[in-house]
Length: 113
Image (cartoon, rainbow, N blue to C red; front, top):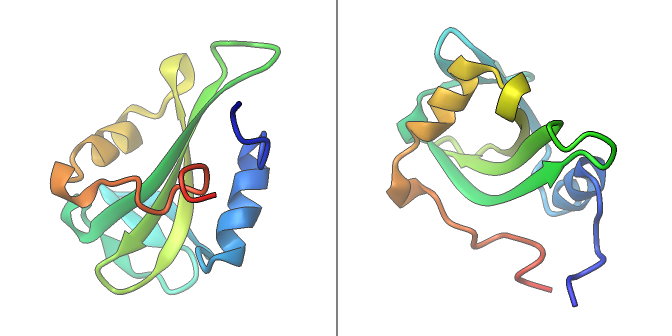
């Protein structure tokens, strides 16, 4: 049976925050930017350590993915990206450019419980 630990994006974000993933990031000018420190990151500066995909309960085309990330400057946080018809193409392309060697599921709370 699938873990009932968290059902929605906000639930997962809160759990990861308790594990130290507290930085918030936004995408601007082809870079991921820490909203507080203003540090800027290129795809090769990011490690994805877990990801969770969501499909809207009332609207299946309402889709998103939560990335749990660590940076080369030891900043840890999350980034929620809409995908499917509502996706921001440039942000989605940025995440596609993250090297495969920088992507794992090592910190996925569903696998470590």
